[in-house]
Length: 394
Image (cartoon, rainbow, N blue to C red):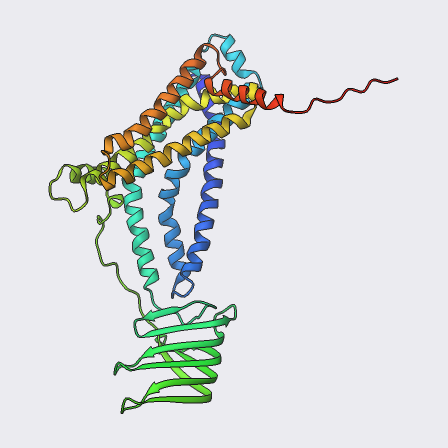
């Protein structure tokens, strides 16, 4: 590795780490807030949310790694270009292909990392995420009642309140529907209620005020009880376990398991769905070297047309590629089109675009079809702009 290679790679390291870190933190924070809201009534919601966030890390690494690498490449190449360092290297006889060599090696290493992430870490973490979420959603009732939320800790109990304090312990306009051991329905309403967990950790005491209770007596006749003060005890429920093993979904299978089941004749998952998932993961990992061929010319063209157009075009192409692969996987799973065509088509189209952009920029670095198209659009828009009025001094 030459001094130039080390210099180029060192320049791109921190922008890539920074882009990945900022993006992952933003995505994890957004998902964590949603999970906290979803699991507001579970017993150990903070512990569950921490486990869920950890299991989401491989998923977000797979999303952010290509985008972070592409963004870092554009930023670094544009920075070198603005400082005329690229011009000095080209004048010294360093070709565009030689400039791309260290980034291609970096992209190949990141592609290997992506294969590990997509092929092995994500399937296990996705199953672990679903297992923890299933346990959290069925972890029972912790004795708190959020406002405007219908809680069903068990099949025989439903609790809801129109308003509650921040701790979920002082309630307003509460409704409790309970099925007794004899199978009779019991409905209780109250204007105010206070929730207190008992010392045994198994029950919750509700101190109700100004309410009514509809119940059935031993003869099966309905009765309405009006009260000023009423105390009711409700049981806390325990967690449930995951009902199935890993492998019920093709996204929970590793690369080797996908290949084995795609060749098997007795797989419960459709063969095209297995092949679509397999090819989709390979395409998402192998797209990284192609990003080098696309990002380097776009970064060089920023000196002529500005940084924003190259980033926008590159981001749109990358986003379109991932959505096209995801759409192809869905079409393959339905059996409407073969997995090879549904997933291979978008990958081949992206590869052709990247190779054409890089090949046309070798003779004239920075002069790409994308750059020329953007310059033409800018010139057309400029024709419709009002020309400044020149006022001559008398």
